[in-house]
Length: 157
Image 1 (cartoon, one colour):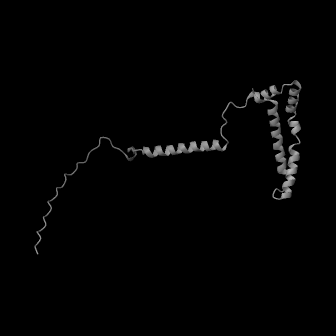
Image 2: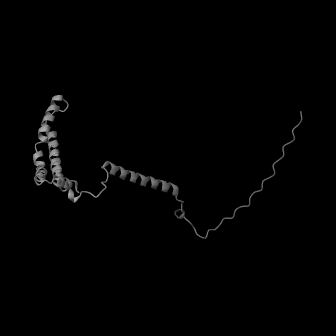
């Protein structure tokens, strides 16, 4: 077996020269040090906040039924048929409120039949009154032989 050669000693490292302290012209305190702003995280957080606000507003408008787009109610739609519909709508809402106060038991077949009979009688009680102006206008149009003119007027033409 051969003998290994002795390991060489590493050359001695030089010691760096001692640093001279720098005397600053302006003395800074800890409060004067400006820290960099993390722009990317600020932008991402701001974009998220804006997106959530827009989504919330859009969802609120959607849940509320949307925003009606169009010219709105026409002044010509104040015809007798529109007035009859509005009067009938008010009557039907009142009938529904009265039905809610009735003691019918909707979970039984007998209760449902009683509620149906009551509702049908009450539902039609005001129809002749609600539609009287429309019926009168139709009767006048028949008398004057101007049904087509009345239909055009009700269509808004």
